[in-house]
Amino acid sequence: MKSGGLLESASAARPTPHGVAARGVPASEERSPSRGAAPMSTYFIRSRIGKICVAIASASPTEMIQNAEDISRENHFLEFRLDYLPNPVAAIPRIKQFLYERSEVTAIATCRRVATGGKFKGTIAAELEILEKAALAGCHLIDIELQTAEHMKPAQMQRLRSRGAAIIVSYHDFENTKDLDRIFQRIHPFQPEFLKIVSTAKTLSDNVTMMRFLDRRRDEANLIGISMGEQGTISRVLGLRAGSVFTFASAHAGEETGPGQIDARTLRETWRIDQIDASTRVYGVAGNPVRHSLSPLIHNMAFRRETVNAVFLPLQTARMNDLLTLTREVPLHGLAITMPFKSEIIRHLEKTDALSEKIGACNTVVRALDGKLYGFNTDVAAIVRPLERRLPLPGARILVLGAGGAGRAAAFGLAEKGAEVFICNRTPETAKKLARQAKAKFIRRDQLAKSSFDVIINATPVGMRSMKPASPLEPKEINARLVFDLVYNPIDTPLLRMAREKGLPVVTGVEMFVHQGARQFEIWTSKPAPEEEMLRVVVHALRQDAAAGRA
Ligand code: NAP
Image 1 (cartoon, rainbow, N blue to C red):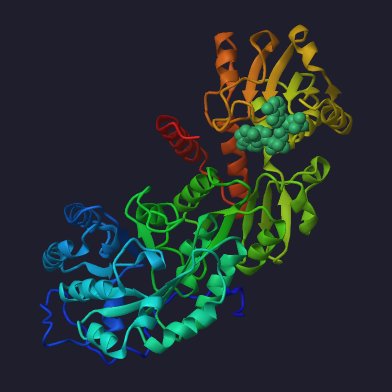
Image 2: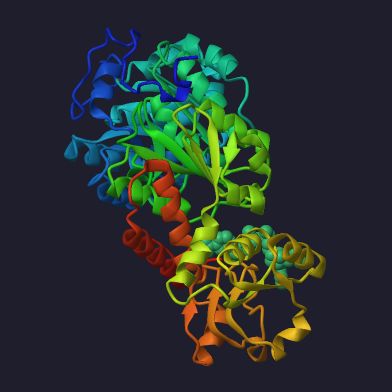
């Protein structure tokens, strides 16, 4: 393994020896089927393309060309997924015209058959005929599946190669990430200009497998390697620096041609794929689920704004060992920890701060200069500080609903500040236990209507967008001067609406979310966090979420 972790290795484009002899032909040159032409050299192609190839999957030739026109304003590297068209041949003259007019565009033609994961229902012969026409129309690369290549007679391959386009031989595994070297060995004898292997990540470690493979083989071929699926995001973002020549993106969200594909703008703007290099530090939010986490949004924005060379990824996993492997192998420089790992992570860290130890929960991990992992809890400060700004905490009567991770952070943090904390929970035994540990008091639900508090805090998930709209309390149980709902999606929860209707001031969960994220940023970077900007992007995203009616 290279020093500092294989996934930190440099991403310089290194053309390989094969394909070098063939001279590149200008994109706009007519290719004659009778004359034949040498395939475009990999040097020529690599000098034209960027890091992202945008796949265009449209239902008609008109729509496909319209999309190509739109996309090519920002991206000059496109893939025409001809297999998405009912009649792919009908699109060829339009593509020819488009490429003639847009000579800055480099195009891949793909007509993948159903048997190999595409949409084309025709035979191998029909697929080859379409690809040959696409090459003659000016497409710079044509993609054939390994299974197709293995069925082709040498003369057929020769004929295809004589049409002037470079060849990508690709293999897709929709189930697993395994046998990558064996697949490489099957593809390599065809001597394609580009060799593409797309697997499916079922774990975070599968990304490590893919990136190790890319790093190992990068000098032997022009490789494209990606792991599909929700857990494959890491390979899509970091695969380039491990050795993938380029990666694929969808034109827009909702137009993916492969599971887990990310749209080009998000790859550029959120993941800043163009800036990722050997020294980019990698961070992530680990838990299950993290699909809708807004942590990548705020941290990537903060890294960009504060010019920190770092990227923040979603790390979806149900297994601690999987997370630990990824953390060690990439290596990760910091983690935001969410459910269900906040307690379990502690015993895997070198040391945690006293508060995390006491609460038994850690939401922030940082890799120190000694290479070891240290834990902190920023949830506590994110609950305490918004309240401290609004009222004196010593002696304040504070009701905490819930006795899970957030409830524990609230109880310990507020008790430490001298508040009189009351815990109420659906499962009374858990509340009693927490009350004992945090030197707080247990209170039954049926006592609430007759009790009053300075602050009521909701530390249960009741009110979250993903659940049935509900408040954890009835109006008669809300007897307080201030209500703080830790739920942040939606911003305006049923509990907060109820409190406002009673004329009470409120604190939203967004304030906590941004605060805990800002402290994480400071722990990781030792720079002040751009807290206002973080708040702005979160509120914007949540409003968009609400407008789209997403769960
Ligand atoms: P957790 O560890 O799973 O604890 C959930 C708590 O809520 C438990 O005490 C549970 O009671 C109770 N609960 C669950 N479902 C309930 C229901 N339907 N009715 C009544 N009580 C219920 O979760 P957590 O990490 O503490 O997080 C709790 C919530 O806080 C999250 O859902 C999130 O919305 C919010 N949060 C916000 C931030 C932020 O930055 N704003 C940060 C962390 C958490 P039992 O003991 O009976 O199971």
